[in-house]
Image (cartoon, rainbow, N blue to C red; front, side):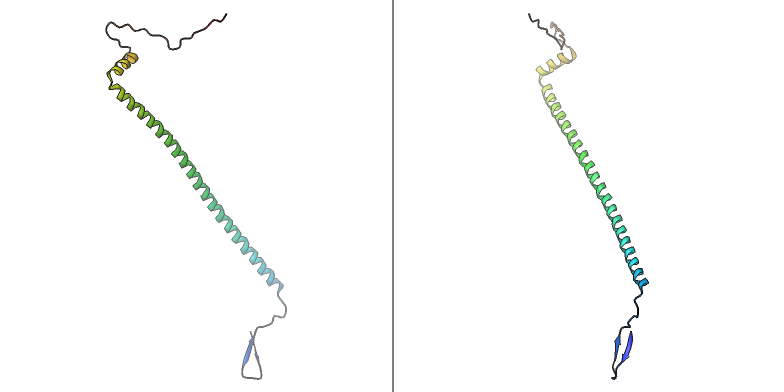
Length: 130
């Protein structure tokens, strides 16, 4: 800053006027700004990539968990149906008529004086057409 004295006791401060603008200085300032913007852009891109990977991993983990839940629900429904079938069988085994029939069928027992005949399950019948 340059001090100029007027005819009075008060002096006025005025900025120094540069005689010629420095072109090297302006180019240097532009280079610095470009470098800073490039660095900020690179840092921003890295941050976006890191957060993108985190979001992708979280989504994949969520999808895997949902698949496991679905498989567990299917297993649970299968076990519940098996349990209900077993409860029905237990209640039927308390019935003496059903119990006798079951033992005869499964273990080939018979009452005294009773004859058992085994027939094949897959009896093929053929019809002859004339």
